[in-house]
Amino acid sequence: MANTSAGPTEHPHLLLIVGIGGLPAADALRTALGVTPRVSILCVTAWSDPAPLREQWEREAAGHGGAFLAATDLDDAVTAGLALHEQNPVAGVVTYSEVLLQPQARLTEALGLPGNSVAAVSVAQSKAAQREAFARHGVPAPRFAVVRDQRELAAAVGTVGLPAVFKPSLGAGSKNVRRVYTQEDLVEAYQQSHSSRSAFLQHDEAYLLEEPMPVEGQDGSRYADYVSVETLLFEGEADHLAVTDRLRLQHGYVEEGLVLPSRLSPETVEELTHCAEQAIRAVGLTHGAVHTEIALTPEGPKVIEVNARAGGPIPKMLLAAAEYDFAADIARVALGARPSAAPAFTGVAWFRFVPVPDGDWRVVSQRTAQEARQAFPELKQVSLRFAPGREASRNNTQHLASFTVAAGTADDAAGVAADVERFLAISLEPLGVRGGAEAGGR
Image 1 (cartoon, rainbow, N blue to C red):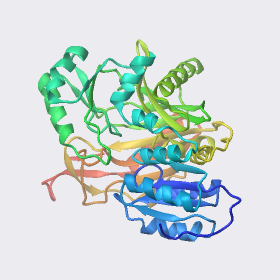
Image 2: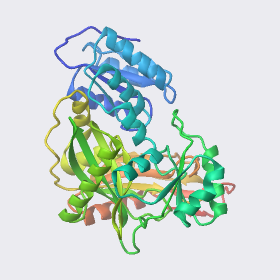
Image 3: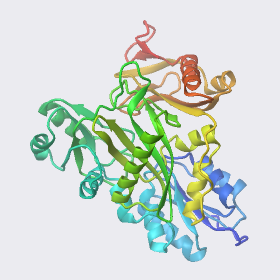
Image 4: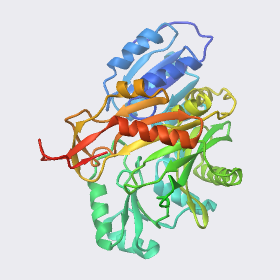
């Protein structure tokens, strides 16, 4: 433990776990401090240097009764959190990261604080366990087979058929999700995924083979045929905050973007939120944010997956479209406090992922994020993944850039987003080419 500060005790003590993914750590700390000034940081250092965050915490939070802790891995994080509680009892534990949900659940369960059980988080982080829970509880979902060994692939094809979708049970961001058409495709997908390294320190040997669902979207439509339901759970009760549309998939299963609020009818939204609640109950979640992805199939909604956290860009999208601070409410619920009123939308938030094309590329040139922000007042957030000269491949990340715009209508937001993407002018060339004709780009 480091930098423990004595201070006032009238404010609840919130422990924030950071280190990888989710809301950027600097933003997460500022959000937590907006809920209570008494914030301790538990930074898992397996993926990041804690020094910049430690400096921010010392400037903005020291002196209010919290502490700054560094842990080497997930188990060490639990040990450090328990030790902190012995010296300086915490009232709640929060994280915005998929990878850090397990230490959060282990701490809240051990300390009797508001939070999901370890068992429920384990189901939420395993697509195989989710599918089995859905089958037991009658939740509409695709036909599936669980594969734990390459020798089980043939039997899985017998259950699901081909073509099919192959995916790892543990993972995020559609990494290693592939449509397979033949037994040979399936073996190749299994071997590639089995040898792939993941940011997850926990491990799951299971894979899924599932019936393909027509989620890509129709030609001529800007939307994919799947959505997500954004939910906040407080004392076991679900508040379904919004349904988020997805942009049409044009690069396989690589995500293209999100639009909030949904263009779907109130009747369809009600059907989708009911389906999400069925899935959430089947998984066993009771507290905090939930992000449920649902396919819009000819047979009706089918659940793709449930995530026990906010969808990556959703908190900032809700701020842009409804001035609703989802991240702050997640922290309030972690402290056992009632969340604020549900969002009231005044506009549309459009989040665009710019995919990396198939192949291996070098970024030749692009405009800067600062130039884009100056040119577009509607731009709420922009992230460029690669500097000029850097190599880009889907083996490392699926996107060249991401950005969020806000406008009064979906049509206006779509127009601004297209203008921003053109303005960024991300130019690519295939690896091995220098000074020749440009062979790729956006």
